[in-house]
Image 1 (tube, rainbow, N blue to C red):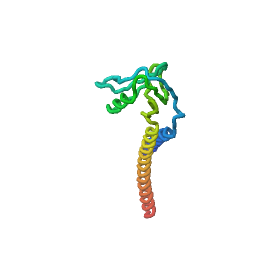
Image 2: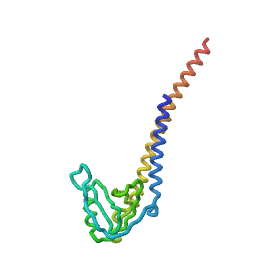
Image 3: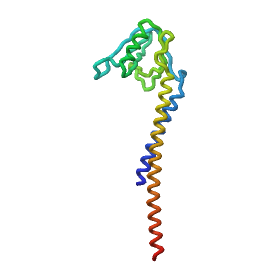
Length: 172
């Protein structure tokens, strides 16, 4: 039984670490991101493997080698992008590129502005990261409560055994 408690405590620790990563990410601002500003030279929807309809919106800035992509599950978002971003518009892109290979599409856009209008806002990501962290901390708490209850159950069994052993010893 003791092994099960250690598994629960290990799982709680992992959920706590994951929650802490998201909580740390929620403290980031645009100063933690890289920045590119330029004129849109290529843009439009693109198909990802095993997809019937376009589900990636590609943006490339004039004079830049990096290609940016936005992946969302809702079609409405792509329509908004097509309306708000036109060829020749000036874009300000804040992005991250950890684990980014040369030639890959960068999907890690944190903030996107087109001609002064914010299209992707980093504050929404910050709020989402805080919510995810709170949910992960809650799951951690559930694992800790289950481990505590399991430990209490073991202690009751052990105390009952000691009481039984003591009562038999007294009768002899």
